[in-house]
Length: 495
Image (cartoon, rainbow, N blue to C red; front, side):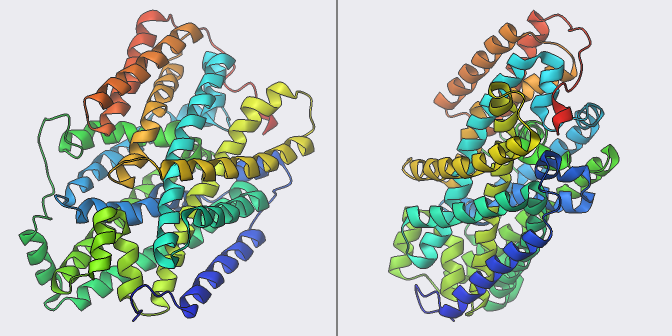
């Protein structure tokens, strides 16, 4: 096994081989990256199962692999987080039954094209701006979570770790756009699942008595509490939060977060997109595996307490629990494979964001300010934007690292909660063909104020999604007449 603090040359070789092999495969599978349709939508010709796995990989991310264990491991932590899985599943089903059809019938390349066709360009531009804010905040946290793994494993400075992750993400996105991103996601997710199962298996077989002993120790430490029917709005994880807050959160992820929506629009048909959404519900099995592995690690640490140095590290940041266990206890080579999987998960999430950011930049900034450019010129601008946005997200991650927040899991949900709920409200109003720009602007401001007020009173962050979107919908329906029929996607033909 690894000696304390060691990450051997064999482990580094495993990481290097995995990253280089994935890069090579991504290059071979890059598709028609010489066109805008190929770069952003894979020519709308990607198999639904690959799109679904990519969606799973993106929404899982390295954040899940270190922040969920931290939420269970920390003082007072337990399994109540798992309740939100119910809402995530409901959010996928609602998306499949509602907005997915008008998106495909409109032949759009992003939800903001849909808003532009239904509500006009000013509303679409406002939505693009709010998306950039939301995704910038959220993705900076996910980038930071992966950098944290590298920092714990290698001892390197956080700035160096962020730089390495950003460079790989930029290369993969530049190389082949969304096609490369999706196929590398498929490869990485397979390794992620293998890594999670390895940790679970090692923890179970390392505890005398196996699973029954693990459950007994977890019960003694009050880690098995799962259902919470409290109506206290301050409680972060309750059944009501799961049924309403998490459902709206997941609906927002799939419908107005271009990182996820772009993937769904790469499918060959509406039927395939719906199948991709349904299969993506399997992603929550990963969270269950990670939760089970965390209980195993807790039992292992109960029987074999960590060193004083590690206890100090865990007290400072419980997010370090999983990577510390991997490098301290797993055999040489195996730890390298798992760290490579974590590392790849972070890159997967970031390159997905870069592709979504790039499309939003091209449609919202480049084309309006530089009309008449050729497709080749626009594609070049898209690639340049990938580099610039990658550097910006890296800088944002370093700023987030300085914030005093208890855990990365909460931070990853809290930060986008100010911007995504209003955009979800816009999308629903667009579906209903209701809303004028002055009303939408007022509604967005009211939504942000409402979410900020909830935050001031420490209301659970998931509630910001139904409340924020609900404020926009209520104001839009009250103050705006039904709009006349508009062309659904006036600018989608360029893609």
